[in-house]
Amino acid sequence: MMAETVIIGGGIAGLSLASELAVRRGSGDGIILVEAENALAHHTSSRSAQQLIPSYGPEPVLELTRLTIPDLVTPTYAAPVPLAWPSPFVVAGSPADVAAMTVPGLRTLSSDALFEYCPELSDNAERYQSAIIDESAVRTDATALVEWHRRRAEHAGVQIRTGARVTAAQRASGDAWVVTAGEEQLTARTVVNAAGAWADHVAEFFGAAPQQLQPLRRTAALVSLNEPLGPTHPMVDDAASGWYYRPDEDGAMISWGEAEPSPACDAQPHPGSIEELIETVERETSMRVTGVRKAWTGLRTEAPSGIPVCGWDPQASNFLWLAGQGGYGFQTSSALARAATDVLVGGQIGGWLSAETVTALQPQPATE
Ligand SMILES: Cc1cc2nc3c(=O)[nH]c(=O)nc-3n(C[C@H](O)[C@H](O)[C@H](O)COP(=O)(O)OP(=O)(O)OC[C@H]3O[C@@H](n4cnc5c(N)ncnc54)[C@H](O)[C@@H]3O)c2cc1C
Image (cartoon, rainbow, N blue to C red; front, side, top):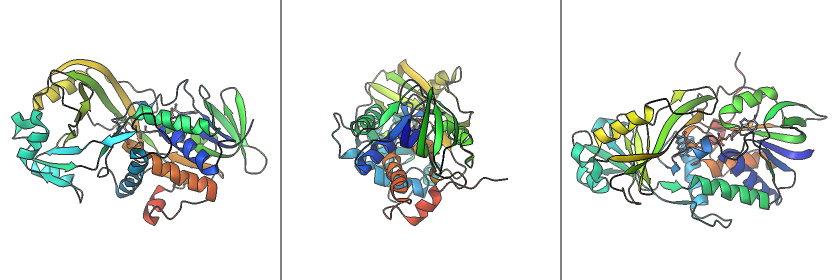
């Protein structure tokens, strides 16, 4: 089968690129997305906190986030449900711990104002003396967003293959690739590596420069509470320890906020981890957990710089990286899809992104 572009990976990265590229080209003909699992977004993209925080991350991530949020709040292609809506983000703790996490533009909250937003912290006034709020943060519905990209891509003619794991690649004539995906051999002029935690592994098939990507575990749960937090309650991050919670239906999503190195795999919570997290939440707040609806672990995959990797591989021609999104894969998704599309269509990222960010995104040469 002949293709113009094969995208490897059916998470938010691969799907948002498929939909953006198809719309930009005016057709999805010749674009094939291959996903190893039998369902799309089986790995990290179905395991996130679904928050887009313009004050969270290194500067290139902040710029990509600022550019992504408007695309999700007011999508140009019909969305049957809202893709994003306001959802403030609060960091609370000691003055020193909160100050360490402050970036310009955030509003400081007095403890009275904090306890008005978050009455469940008011019994622990000694720990929560100080807070900052990012009122420009938004929540996304990750399932709806992934589905929105799938529909937009397929409507334009993109072919999506699930159960099609890439296991080998070789050069075809010219600079094209022959990619083995499941039972199929796909010949493509360009290949995009959006394989999440497996991106360095996939790169080996193509002789591309490894980006030293490290998958990092993060565990979370959806719990029921004795008293709901209310839909406008902010997401709250404990400045000292990094655990966090946010409202979810009649309960909350809670997470350790940890970053524990892991091989690429279908990660699962360590035994006892959710119980310990619930103990912590109940010790530090007045929230009382009445049940666990779902618990999971996902892999946030980072390059050593902590900045996503988006650009041509320095040694394997016609091989584009779209990986290393770490904990920012949703909040940077539209801008990164636009950047990757620029490269595929015109050879380089356009002037809408700062030169510093464009440089920071470039894949690194292989080290000895
Ligand atoms: C607990 C937690 C909370 C998070 N919270 C947020 C948040 O609030 N906001 C935010 O922006 N981000 C958040 N993230 C990060 C975000 O979820 C990720 O950055 C994003 O999902 C990564 O998307 P991806 O498409 O790169 O990876 P994935 O979703 O993992 O997709 C990669 C896909 O590639 C496929 N693949 C791998 N190898 C092959 C192969 N050989 N052939 C074919 N397919 C292959 C995999 O099966 C997988 O489906 C969070 C992550 C976690 C774990």
